[in-house]
Length: 177
Image 1: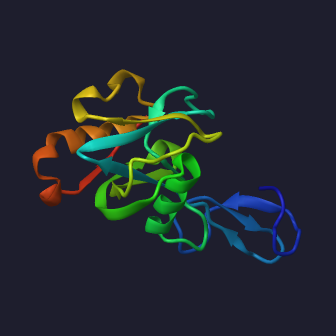
Image 2: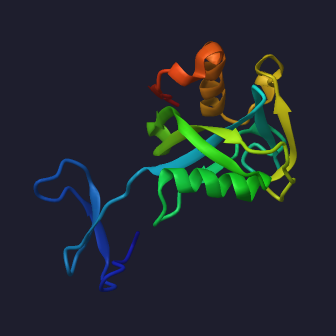
């Protein structure tokens, strides 16, 4: 950031008083600009004990498998973001069950939230974002072809607790580099 979005004056990088992190601050009106982590919200759509995965049709990780998900928008809840992303990426109708995992990635300034979800019908459509969509038994998940480490970590958590997902504990972890 070079210029203040409030008054147009230049900004500089300083540690504001009563703070401990360098931030962009306006040289004219003293507005402080905070940068916060991005929130990525995903669903884990399940139908008949199978998990729906999407083959990515966009970068990053084009052609790899992932769960429906993406960046949360302003003005929506995490659950609303999971529902919207599931519709956008796979044209699926789901109901949210519960949070399965929260994974922080400080090196990329991201927080990934995964919701267990019920796929209401085994119907879906490919989209620009998902060129192939398929239900997988947990034993048949293409582990080496998953797009993201957080997706793999979450699915491994599901695998460990597959016999009692209703009492599955929340996975709360971090991934570095």
